[in-house]
Image (cartoon, rainbow, N blue to C red; front, top):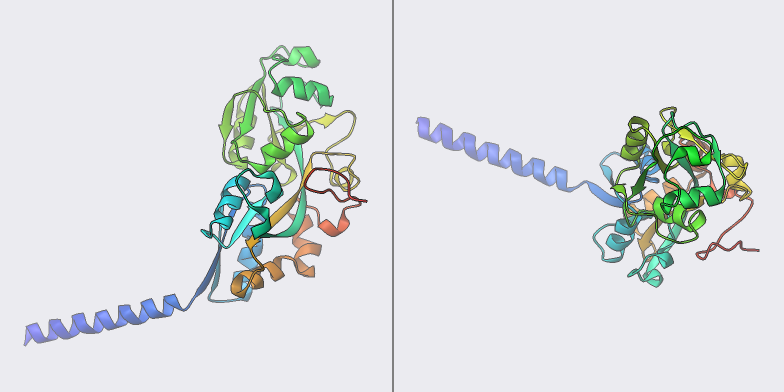
Length: 284
């Protein structure tokens, strides 16, 4: 009798688990991977989207723009987040991808608060990241060795910084980090440190540097007076359909663009007074 009861219990439990599994499988999901500069915006929008659409899930991961572009092209993910145009990524066939520009982000050099410098020329910044200037005293700061911290190769933030500050030259070999958040922490904790961050990651833990007398502000980005900026792209392989299309429509909706984008440190594309193409040229 006991064996029959145990058997019935196991059978019932199995049926319940099977039912739960079927219920879980009914949920829909979409995965977006790539740019860490864009990640805070996509994560916040995903949370709101999921609240409005119960049973629909958006998985957001970092990894860098290069990873996002490569994975969306090979079909591993639904959306590839990128700070760079697909045309700029070696090995990516941009003709297979559809570009959805969801925002603009400014990028600024950041330094440890004790370096004693508030402004540099573009040429001084370039010489620092190429290894020609090695002490802050050489540019009017404290007698402190310069410690360079770069984003990892494949980062759209790094690509943008090197394009507009280093004239497409590669920064000197140095410590590299995948995460923008980790970059901010290391710069904050390391005497003499310098790196670069998207505006959305800047906090009071680090100091930003003006360049050639121009402050890194949204208003200066909009007019291109501050040239270190990029579009925030969300690429799909072909035109999006199903849940991917629903999420893309949501992030491009007026409510998100007019409120959340600015609140999180980004600039709506509609507010830009200039437009740039994949070569960095101003579109007339």
